[in-house]
Amino acid sequence: MQGKILMPIGDATETMDTLYAYYRLPEEGLEVVVTGPEARLYHTVLHEIPPNPDVPWDITQERPGYHLRADVAFADLCAEDYAGLFISGGRAPEYLRYDNGLLRVTREIWEAGKPIACLCHGIEILTAAGCIQGKRVTTVPKCALDAEQGGATYVDEPVVVDGRLVTARGYQDNTELLRQFIAMLRADAA
Image (cartoon, rainbow, N blue to C red; front, side, top):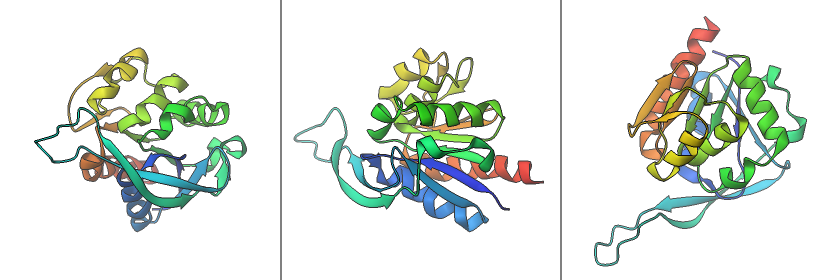
């Protein structure tokens, strides 16, 4: 299989959400093109609820992760160049969803019927781009409201496929998310 997969990131992109796909997709012959608000190095983060029952956390704790370079800026993207879109989570989607270049290319990929994989807070980008109206999706439970505000039906399941869209809650569901996404890309290549 050949083709390019677009992967938007920004500072505070979740490490596990992102790097699993970053390394897994090339194993299928796909080229991952990392994009950001600017072409530069970005900081990823690790999100985890600390396993200390004596001091519980209601939300994830954030720690620095690895760095990842974006090779192209959102403003310079052409949707026709990509076979699909992989949107990871972390806190980055909270501000990336305001970038008009990213929203434009997301809508263009969506309208072209190309496969989109999304997990965790990535749903905020799809909501802002207006791409999930009437869809059945999952995401991390604290982003259920974002999905519903985008006109989707939120379900608390590990992975949900609805047409050309596959969504997952978080990095713990990455294996099945990528299995479904790769199947969609293979079907397009056939």
